Image (cartoon, rainbow, N blue to C red):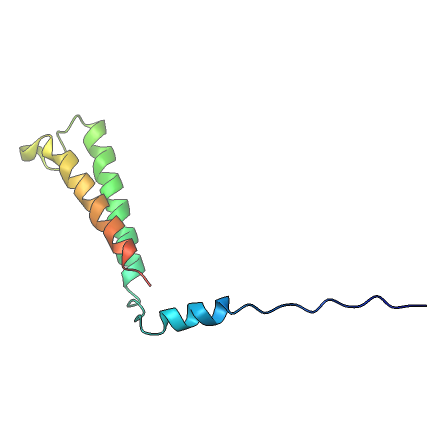
Length: 85
């Protein structure tokens, strides 16, 4: 009985190119990912509290600027994700 020829897998150079491209980029410190996750969650909680209380809390004296603080925290957290390696 004739045997069918087995296909050989072609190895592309993509893996080597990716490894070569990332060789010089340092890894992030171990605290980086928990830090940006915390900042993102804190910003989300800040915005939820602001909307639920009509901008009276978390800081009563600044009023509607509470929304800007929450969005600012979300922006900082998002920018931190861009530097994560």
